[in-house]
Length: 185
Image (tube, rainbow, N blue to C red):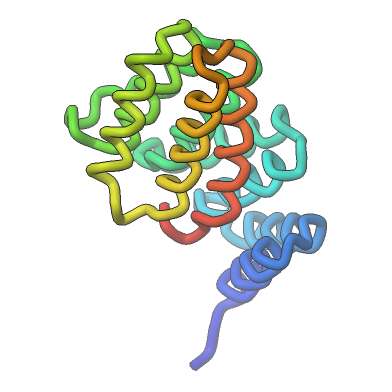
């Protein structure tokens, strides 16, 4: 079966990502985005790699481009909002998450976004309820659920979690989720 240069570059990028070879992954994904600049997936994956490698500003730009190309990408939108929240831009995260927050009440991404916004507002009790509900109804996304369990664990272990601790947990969860959730968006 013959594959296109785009498919080859994308596949190389995914393989390198899974092997934690960030520079190789970024080179392959950038090649894929040059081959098909209107395809949102390479931009999404570039954002994921940049976020995981500690380059949140560049990751935000890549996620924003991915969403510009396909505004319906819930996972890309969730990750962009998470990065905005982690840098203290509650208003930006709320705006980015607006379409996710308009999802049906029982949608996991909506519940996770609501929960993380509540963490940022200091409402850890409500945050815990929302995140737990998202996990309960979202069994199909094991990587994201594991990461949200990590957020809950950090919240619980600290008792009444300070915002900075919850944000650190959310950051770690977001980075782990990015790596484990490729191809599921």
